[in-house]
Image (cartoon, rainbow, N blue to C red; front, side, top):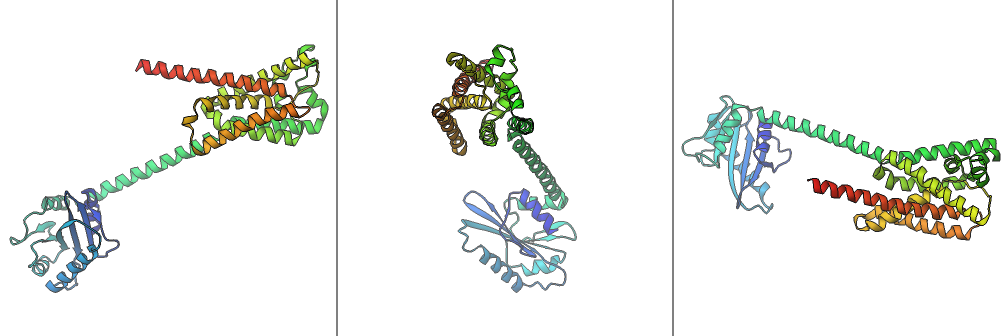
Length: 360
């Protein structure tokens, strides 16, 4: 019964002030300007209970409350027992002592006691009319809370999985497979997929504007590009959506390839190009613009990661001008296309927000 009363008191706004008090518990409820203190003692059969033992018990309870910096305390002592006469006699000198008759499921409040105590008489009678009701309510609340926690954990797990840039991972896997095939079949395989100006313009092999992004010049070239692509994917993939992200990757990579071809025609070069760096630089261009445009909305680790990528973008372009054999035209064309794509995306989002606001 004491456990059921504890559940009931929790629903009534009382807070337990004792921990594992055995047969004795203290509950507090903050009121305006004072604290209601309810002391509950379960008197079991066979335990001697006299006036002296009652006063010793109450003094021990008051000692537990000493030093807690509580405001004015209004106390009520409740004895739960089937030995009503013994409990009533032991507490005869205390007006603020009531007895809960567990045998008759009623309250025993002698005439010389305080008749009511901040509405607690009605509260206890309500409890005795349905002792297990509060416990069932709490169990239902706990069940719903556990369900909500499990639901949130599933959502968090789903978000964690969703946060992985799966398109970028997929592209990396395809590039790895192409690398393995390149290792097996050698240079002729790479030449078939590279961005070769002669093959594009004279043989009209326009497919190379896509395939050149999936072949690389060795493991180091592959790893550097895929690490950058993965970092970009964590920032852009969920923002664009995976379908738009994969379309944009290939579209911007094609624009970077066209920029490379145009520059080779201009300088009269027929050297083929390979690698995903044109598309990667395009995504960095998107990030550069969106970072500058929305820098106040980024915080902590996200801002640091983005700034690192922006610095790497400019450093890559700078190194491209200094390093022989690097297709810097694809880098520059990709970054320019990415910045334009970032501007277009920003304008689309602002238009949608303005349209939504006007329709409300």
